[in-house]
Length: 75
Image (tube, rainbow, N blue to C red; front, side, top):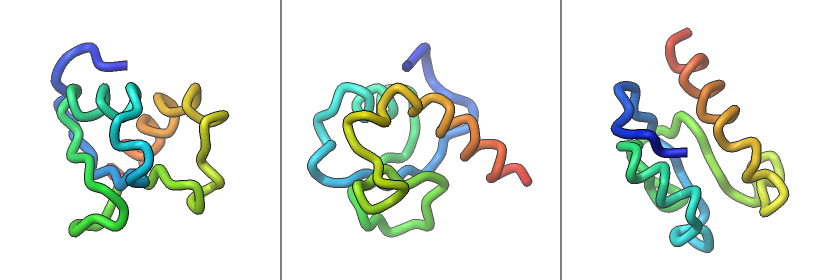
């Protein structure tokens, strides 16, 4: 997912059990502000089992979720 540093970093809350997931590490490498759930700042996106039942099946849709979070943030 990471292709370099993002110019539109998001605040993303992630469930602690996924702190070492390759896609989460890619978000960090891309320059997003990843906090472990619950974080200190209001999130643009939440990746947690209780949020939209996010789980292993959902990782292929992460890029689309990030794009939608950016769109919602601009609105």
